[in-house]
Image 1 (tube, one colour):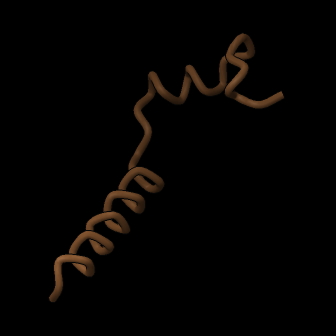
Image 2 (cartoon, rainbow, N blue to C red; image 1 turned 90 degrees about the vertical axis):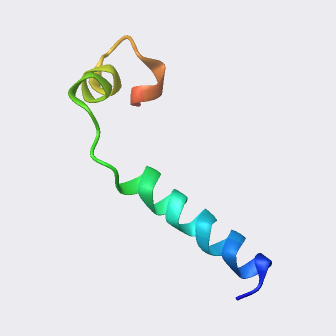
Length: 41
């Protein structure tokens, strides 16, 4: 394995972790809060 393929693999693993990690209750409440503009409109 070359260094480039190791970096690409590591990036993919981190991206998958951040996309599919279980959200904590505090993060979920913050996201669903109506005063939070990031929660959608």
